[in-house]
Length: 61
Length: 430
Image 1 (cartoon, each protein chain N blue to C red):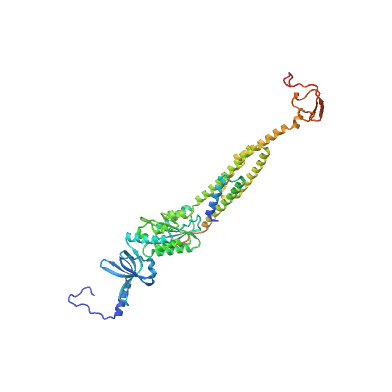
Image 2: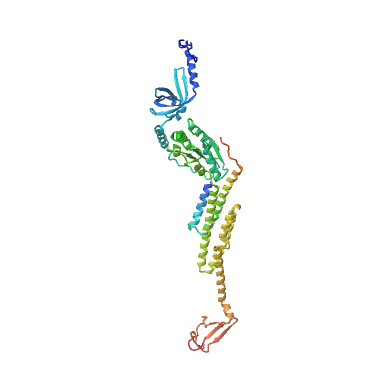
């Protein structure tokens, strides 16, 4: 899943949680899923940072 | 010819030379002129097999035949009566005894001619649906960003400073090409191709500082616009312009006014993304916490104590599960963030406080129940009096003298016979 898809998923989960139409146990599942999606997105960002730290800018052609 | 001519010496004697040799000398002299850019008016362009075009270029009282090979037809816009700039080389063809300007490029000159060309190109692009094509989204986290720009230091410096502000060291690849003059459109297309050939590049920025219609003409080139549409990855254009926008603006996936804005559009900002993610997590936490509180209120309002006790146990286990999930989510770097979140559902928070209070109420009601237990009432010295048919007797007037009653004590029972009934209000105290 692309980074933007993860962000959209997280926003969608928060939206569902806020809507109040979800039962309490389903809400618990949504909250748990939100935490996992957050962790994945954070991981992607951290991976980019790690790449930057290891790379140098390509010289111009 | 010498510098000091004798006025009365005759003209120089003719040098005998063959036609072939004379032609060759002419051809050599013409070749020495090298590449030129010549302005003039187009007269009677005619196109032949293979796409080769011939026209006469006229300016004041001079004219020359121009030929555009089929392979250069893409870069030639010769319209009768229009003024153009021809870039090419002059040659003499001995076989035909003709001076010929062979063009690499024929570009319109003057605002009117340029505008007319752009209109016809735009019409062709629109006819192919390219101006209305669906725009590709710019990736939020491209693996590498390629920038095709001129050698002007300012454009590259602007972009690099934006990168440094948003995410220093972000993987960038700069491809420098000629962005004005003859052959520029071709060079830019080649630059786009090179940028896209790098498999890690996920987006390309095409950037140039400001210029007028003539300088920006390469960016309205039909082949360049088509190359943008066919590029492997999304293309962002940032062409500074003082007048009309170049045509590439109308087919690009994203158009930005300046190279700096383009850099901001493609290079992620670590700070912004971190804040956005953190904000979402916090919202999820507070919404979840509010749901828990709502459930707790409903439980507290429910009458049956059995349901209250069951609800308390269920909510308690959900609370514990929620805390466990949270600890899974917590990345080590965001300790402060997760601590704030934890405080919301920490046992010192309002939600757990209400649950604890509900438990206290449960306990109190339990004690009340205990107090009402009949066995304990009897232990305090009270007795339960029943009639012969088993009903509990509460009023003296509900029985009469001589009736047999059953008295249950804390320990043992008595079978008694009523000697006298004394109802309340008849003078005796209870």
